[in-house]
Amino acid sequence: RMCDILHKRQLKIHLRLDPLFNLTGVKKEQERLLQIIHGLTRKVVREKKSSQGSMLRDDLDDNDENDIGEKRRLAFLDLMIETANNGANISDEEIKEEVDTIMFEGHDTTAAGSSFVLCLLGIHQHVQEQVYAELRQIFGDSKRKATFGDTLEMKYLERVIFETLRMFPPVPMIARKINEDVQLASKNYTIPAGTTVVIGTYKIHRREDLYPHPETFNPDNFLGAYPNRHYYSYIPFSAGPRSCVGRKYAMLKLKVLLSTVLRHYRVVSNLTEKDFKLQADIILKRTDGFQIQLE
Ligand code: HEM
Image (cartoon, rainbow, N blue to C red; front, side):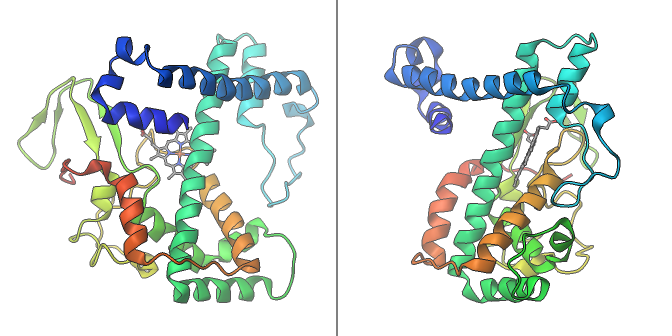
């Protein structure tokens, strides 16, 4: 609901202006929602702080693995609290802000991504059958939980996820404010400092010169090495030094989550592909009107 408010403020001019926004009921609702959100992150930090000591670096055994086979490391929040305790200049509020970021980035995006995969598999039954066949091959009749090793074998499911994030990227666009003049490598053009540049992920992912039949859901777009495609033609997690820190974790989480659902249930949909695309596109198509040349 907080996201709805943010989106409303982008679309409705009178809500953009703080003095007007502050007079509305939406602002009151925002305050109430933020209390819930920040209350939760404060609680996470508080609980972590009070349980610290039981999970510090020295206690971690190098050979200790968690249930998906990853080596246990000091978690991000533990690390920040430990750093603060060791005299670094990080305030509680700054730690909370980092936790806000991770919690928001980590859950909204994967929730959207996994929902889009399930919707598409509901529509494309033949694709779902192939996913199911792959999962049968990996798990047979076993009811055991997915391991990290299993996720490495989910090659077809991985392609389905990639293709879903291509057509329906949960983060459909990103933006950067340019701090200094940028001379484009490919063209005699300088973007002046102070400009906000919008990268239209959704738009790039639907370019016909990059993806033949871009409006068609086709997991085989990610078959093989696809060497002819531009390096930045697929950017659901952005790219470069400020790209998604949760990328690997997100793919792991999506595979574990989706394989668990799809091993046990067949997903059906009474939407046609056209209906679904219409609905999802309305949400994601905010980049329309922006054009960006791939450099
Ligand atoms: C399908 C799932 C996900 C997608 C599509 C996604 C996408 C993105 C994108 C496009 C960005 C760049 C945003 C920008 O530059 O404005 C980003 C940044 C980020 N993501 Fe993700 N993300 C996903 C999952 C996750 C998860 C699971 C976590 C954490 C557990 C996470 C944590 C972050 C953080 C902390 C940043 C900011 C990095 C920085 O500014 O240096 N994301 N993500």
